Length: 115
Image (cartoon, rainbow, N blue to C red; front, top):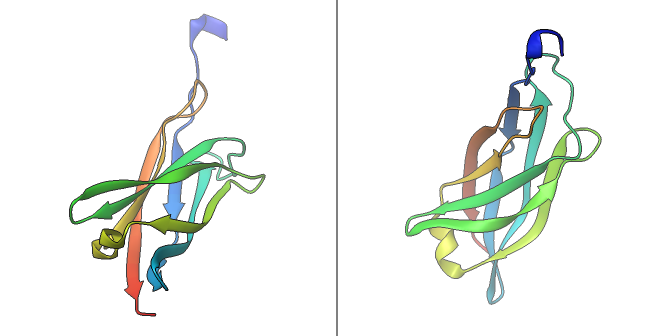
């Protein structure tokens, strides 16, 4: 880069509302979904890892990580969690950043639905 500057683009991460439900003896979140975009261009950022965390009353619970697809979308499906996860009102999606993109985090609602 001229002048020795490195350009790092800011990112935007958005997450869709999700549900958590009991399914027999299991507690399941059918889908956690987040979209990562370049905040300057609005274009999707593909090939980056997004980490999901369920925010329970007893503390954060790791829900896995997924690489974004060509549309910048990271989706975790059929996430099995402990029964205490039904206390969670939200989940967090986080992108830690890279040498070319700044990190971003978002929180979305997580609604408990009965069997």
